[in-house]
Image 1 (tube, rainbow, N blue to C red):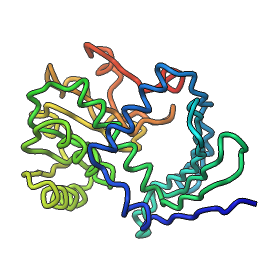
Image 2: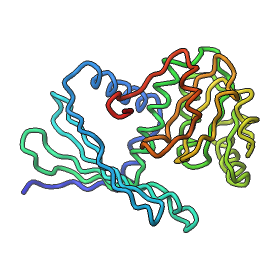
Image 3: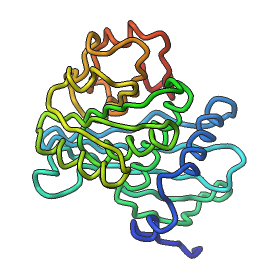
Image 4: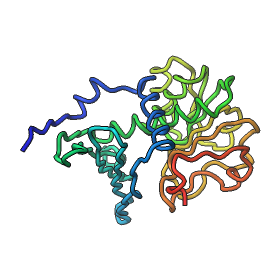
Length: 256
């Protein structure tokens, strides 16, 4: 058996951050997906309805790379009530030549958080207006703050708004984001008000009913919908997609 390297979340946080390198890496992955014979099977999802949870298993192989990973990502969305993160998980890295396990990345969802936020940065960089200044994030979890940070890496964001049904959670998230990014970040529980002045909107919730309505969004606004990663999730009003000038998905197969 080969030596198997085990890296903890602490180890990974020392070497990987949400920065321009991360955004470039994810962009390169999207380019490979579009231009190379990438093998990416459908996501395996196990729903744990009794506890408002799900487990996703994802993998892909990019020709030419020495390794491939299989990610196991549980999402239990009532966990914050228990003082636990809603997302955790791990990744196993295998040799592309032998299939032997080479590393276990005990990231507790950290790498997923970084990758997801970086993807939001890629989308905004290519699709949002160059003069975008104000960002609104729907959701008040870790991903909300990371999405806002990613936007500041690709646009000159000078102010932001955090929306959540629970105003206290929105205020906590907004305060943390403002301290980290050095820009004013307001909080609201009024969804319509949150969208009013937005140049860029990012939704980061597991909502099953729309939290963003079509008639709230002004012309020229870029919207990135991150939370609707399963058929039963529906963060945004379907009419909003219908009225968009351009609709872009990262994988057509996963949107059908």
